[in-house]
Length: 222
Ligand code: SF4
Ligand code: F3S
Ligand code: FES
Image 1 (cartoon, rainbow, N blue to C red):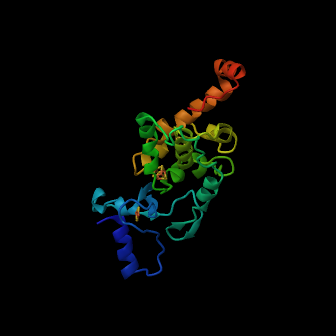
Image 2: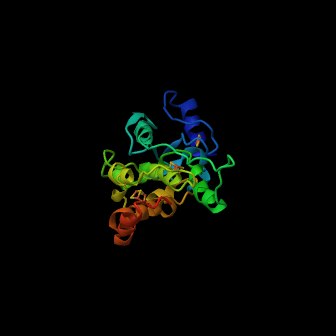
Image 3: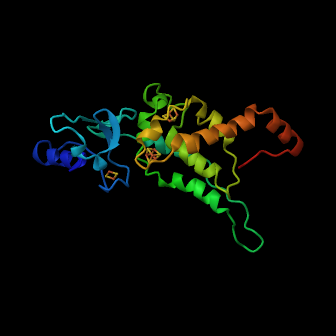
């Protein structure tokens, strides 16, 4: 039995109007995110047997987002951020009409596509949760998406200045809390945020790269 089953039992027997969002019951839709004994988790993937039978299990809505009712929160902030991310812009096809990519480049971004948009990483990140910098910080889920676009071998758009100025990656101080709670095991900090920060450092703080840009007139994309 998982925590979501227990919530359904409570709904059936004691509180018919208890609000709880869920859909797949398989850890793949990202709907049932909540805080279980203070830790961001998917209710459908959290077994009651993981807890001591004598222990009280407390479920709460995600703290970072406004509550709609009971365990249901308003996560629309995330979709507003997503709308501001410049979309995939592929380079022209090769002369034979095909696209060619190195397998290692494909493999590198594959991990990011596992994101189920549960927003547990957004919930736990202190920049959004405690400092409430939704005005200036996109949050780890969106650095995953930005990394998947920036590292895409066919993409030609340049989002680096936006990642710095608009999405506020500088607020991230690499606490890695986001990585710890990701139910898909995505290495958010090491594989997405740090490489994006390195691109920023190349662009804005590396004198050699600055000189190269002056000489060639080009920015490093990959
Ligand atoms: Fe959830 Fe992981 Fe995606 Fe964050 S990166 S929204 S924790 S699946
Ligand atoms: Fe927040 Fe993750 Fe950075 S928790 S501070 S985005 S490492
Ligand atoms: Fe879909 Fe839990 S109900 S992830």
